[in-house]
Amino acid sequence: MKALVTGITIALAASVTAWTMASDEIEAVLRNSFVAKNQATMDRLERDAVQSACSAPRGMPLDNDMLTTLRAERLNSVVLPPDGQYLGDWQRGAEVAGNGRGLQSSDDPTQPNGGNCYACHQLAPDEVAYGTLGPSLTGYGARGQSEAMLQYTWTKLWDTHAYNLCSHMPRFGAQGILTEQQLKDVMAYLLDPASPVNQAAE
Image (cartoon, rainbow, N blue to C red):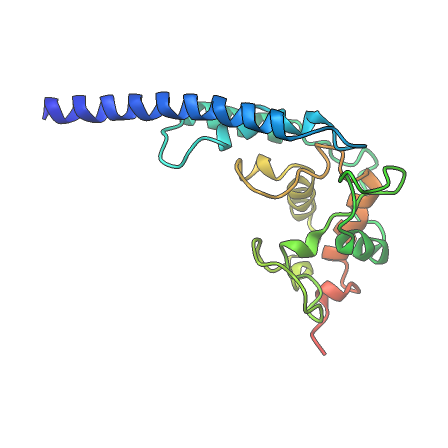
């Protein structure tokens, strides 16, 4: 038994060492391959603590205490609307959700970013082009507009890592991708009963 434990420990140590070496090589390749262009600067290669933890190779053990701390930090950093108003205009929210522009080298930085929500989610039931990486949000407004629901939805949009640390969803508020007003408008698109998201398909 002791030999088995020793073997596993050695194998894990070797895999960590191999990953560290590979990670350094990958980092060098990336830095030599990317160039800054317009608003797409080299800062895009810098990873924060969450991104570093979530970039670990599959099977590598991670410190649960560290992950819990990172999640708590993200949750505590969420900025709720100062005026207490969560919902904007659902029609503007539809435009934000359907806009895939923003932050790319070819995009005009003077124009507002989009949320590109349809890349991963179904929203309005009549929309035929949508991704499936994320869950369908059709009928999202059926969840109601309690304070808890409003805060939950806002937090998911502001920084989804507060709930799901290694989510692929952009941190729209935390990273300044969308403005406070845009977030309110997307909130309305999701929750307003008049929004197409909450209408039956024709």
